[in-house]
Image (cartoon, rainbow, N blue to C red; front, top):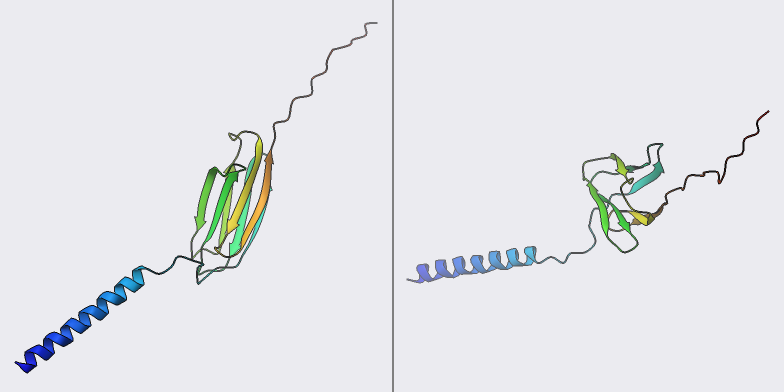
Length: 134
């Protein structure tokens, strides 16, 4: 009888410890990532009106690229994976309305924000045409 009680007590203790460990594991606070990859980025426009973004980073952490307007509405979100070292992104902004946008690149700890201004150029049309006839 003593052996049965001791066995049940050990089984109960192991169950409680395992359960409490699984609860503690699932309730980790969401905060800054442990493995933040350092990164470098560049941004430029091409002749087609697209925004080119180049990212070079360390492996082991993710980097996220976001395009938002001044009101905070997201138009583009892409995550560069842990195992990727470089990424080249091409954003077609020709369909977006004129305004000020922000391109935010972040690894969870360090954030880089570039401002992007879209403005439609009005064609320069002469007010009147003058011709001289000889």
